Length: 231
Image (tube, rainbow, N blue to C red; front, top):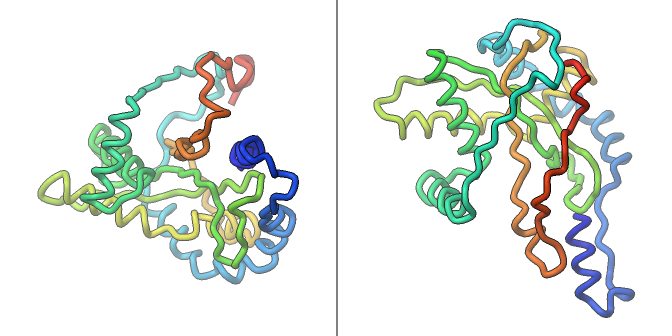
């Protein structure tokens, strides 16, 4: 949002007369969620209880460790391969990029660990306008985190299994905000989630950097956390 505004201002010599488009403020958004969210998402309580009951989410033995012990693995695809993959999954399966990546991750984990079910904690942008609140141009952290249950349906081939997982991903609506509302505002979800794989699709930055003023920085920015911090 900020890069888009800065690019527009730098490119427009008449920026002083340019109309500023604003959307709902973060405080108003939070107030509406607190007041109207519990009633709106009351019907989702059964969904979240089912997910936490049916899926096995414990993945590692509980222990204290420091970030120094964490191993980091990066896999990079070329711009061309990424564009091709995105086009194929949309044209043939009508899937968004985040849906396809999450489905593939779930399938591979279940294959590797010989599981029939798996919970993946998913992080989304949380900018859903279910209450008529447009936050598309609001700077702020609206992130929501919620569990998704993926289950094998023993289809005849990988493609059919892939499509089945897509439909399971789509069972969660409104960016999963209902999980947080039911757990932290209404306090009606008591089951705790153990250690698990987390999935975070950060988004597509192509449009944000589609200008002549900003580009990617390729220098190493350092660690996200101090290596002495334990988790």
